[in-house]
Image (cartoon, rainbow, N blue to C red; front, top):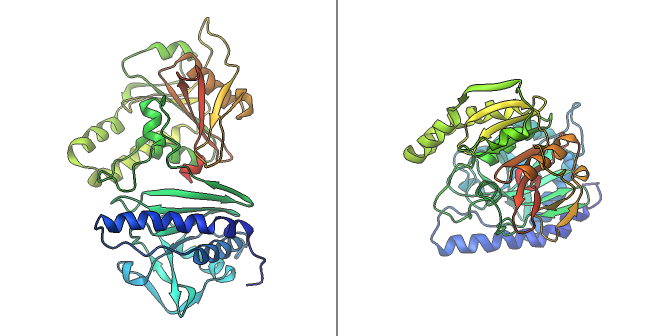
Length: 378
């Protein structure tokens, strides 16, 4: 490797290694099987360093998107193994990156003769295995699989250039969070026996995916007060409400989630795609789609929102009070105004640059609370 050391890799290595050591020890005490050994700090640093520099390269005109898993071949199910392991360095990673661009596929990394190498490709990831994913050049996420679902991960740290965002897994449990926000931010414990399907998280991911920015309003199903904050007539009113997602969620409650995964994903993609239309999509808290492309207005007699409190579930971050325009453009301002006027509603806003904010009313602070959550969604 000719590239200089990536300082953030060394800065975060010990913390990441300790994170895995802690959870793996708990899992083993509980008698869980097929838990991969965790990486030590030296391995974490080397994997992050090589992957960071690989993410900045271009291979045949493409920037690499890579996913690596620290896992031995014997715990990888039925992997594709190379006859000769590849060295873990940026040039190799950038060349083989196209093999793991599709979701759920990872390059397997492990030690051979005391050297880290890429031994093959796998879809099987044991719980608490370290996964490093390149989102875009210079933007990396360290995560691990939790629960029984192979597609569910918890983020540990987000690295963007010299910025390090260590996710505060306990910092999302705010005492005044509405249930919908708690559902979205409060990812299940990695040791929870229940692996529930989090609709708002999946909708948020879908909203970020189209890259156009968008807004989604979640309103009470038993009230029409929210209509006072919407310009009427609405250009794309849905009648009757689109209820596929609501119906599937009721089935999940009674029939189990696994066999409904594909149908749920399709319904979520349908609603997520509608947020790309100018205006806001609106769903009830029972997940029925009511409208999209809706324009938000200040409710008659309501004061204009002048400040919001903003937090981010990142270790070391502190709440701050700002004017809504400091969060983004018109979309953020209108979402903050909507929640300011409709305290029992929640607004989800995706920016074109990938930022994601959840607006909810805070009874404790008596103002709109803006939760910056993109660190959880990458």
